[in-house]
Length: 292
Image (cartoon, rainbow, N blue to C red; front, top):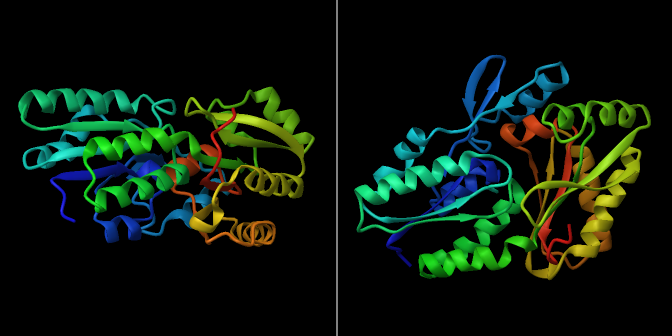
């Protein structure tokens, strides 16, 4: 059903470009800097992810930055000239970027007072945000109003779960997620953090285990404990260039949850990957309300 408003999101969702193209979802491309040059995450279209993680293994230290209000204006104004806009944003607790989104919205609504422009905070990032986008877009395609789609996201955003582990703690240290001391001792003792999305929309350490194999088994356990209605959903396994482990984890999940509808394996994008590094593994699904 044709809609009178545009459904839009950002590339921090790790929404595959093929899905965005198929569903005609405009995507704001978020920036990252690698080897002193700025790039924009296109969610797999250019196929740079493997090379990106290879460079990180060789010592590259990519970083990310905010999009300015002016860039958001360039994305939003052509839409607002013609139609209303629903923007599905990554978690406000992960970056100050959303302040620039709000500033752009305020300026544009003053310029186009006849328009509606809703920004909904998913309290998620990467694949959990993708899951919310896909669920919300189904309602959009059915002809539901902006307010109805927004409310569905608000009602379901704490059910979008991610459980993940990293292979090297230095990337979390660079991003300020853990202290330098914790990173050193964790590396020496082969401690692997189990990290999850919190109710507040932040990444929080839920527990620590020793060894990679134990970490992967723990991700599977947390998936089994928390997923709901697996027969109706596609679980997403994200990986930072560690596809063989991702495939093994998928088989472990299928063994424990044989009724699951589908499991999709995909590479983490460079913006998210800059903060978690190569070797990251994550299980993302719709489940019980976040506990942390």
